[in-house]
Image (tube, rainbow, N blue to C red; front, side, top):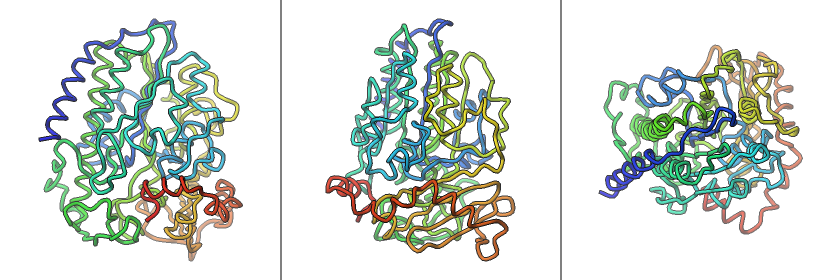
Length: 468
């Protein structure tokens, strides 16, 4: 009853807001920007990427109208670090955000500061406590909305907000508070499809469908959130151990999120704002599901296999432009590349400190290393849980584990599921790959970082699920 009432109210509010949206800006004004980051969204569970379930009809339409990138990788498999790197075009060791307990840096150039200098009004709407006010991201927006209305089913300290409510809040700001005489930047963060997989609408829509029995694994439930080879405690749904059920519920979360995006896109179109708005949709990281041979199921944060660090990126350019059509989409890209590319598309100067590539101007090297890091910087993450650091170069992914020093090497050309560890007979210079990981990490910080946490930071880690 509560879910049905909340959904009905959300639909009513959205209808009112659509009617009141601002008129389109003048042709002389720079385009607006809407950047959407979807928490825990795998690249390969979307229709435009070839997934058989109809999880993403609205994102599929956006991809057809714009450009999507099949080889786009996150800098980090944890939410706080991933967003900090995306916004600043810097790796975690340079942002200082290596795990969810650390605040966004106050003094780094970012896409927010670049847009402020260009006269943009900036508004952020988030759906999780991880990127709420504890993150200090609110200091980089003119308007910041983290009114979180619900809690996770299995972790009462994790506050969040369903996608329809977050989209409604963003549309309300655009309709009533966005200035008419200058462009706006709206960041929308959606927590769906983060676990536990409980979509507010039709959570069992894929349970028992034509694809349901393709997964046969039974995985035991864990007593903690980080025990290898188990379903994490916070993910547990009704004591079930059949992996296919959790995968189906994960997909239903994506479909629910996609419907909220459909409402957003339709509202922008109805009031003539769509044409003058650059829209980018991506994720912070993905999610392991039931991939055989991997250490953690239905998880992220400390794992850097392909399913957690290869994320979607869809960009629909304003005013009918297709400049990104000239970019070789098969080349590997990093989340560091997004901010400079968006600023170039808007005609806004790119800060000198950005480390990522402007895809419209920089040559793309198919062998350029793409480094992805699990959460690190605390003794618990690195020595008790064990976190992965990886580098992707060409088809190869090298992984180093912080807890025991274990190394893994996979060749995605012959083994796209990363199931066969080639480290015993490597077809590449593993030492060079390891050096790339250590250089990006700033390895000298690792040994002492865990001893430098304040009591407040330790409490924050516990609340976010990184400490038992």
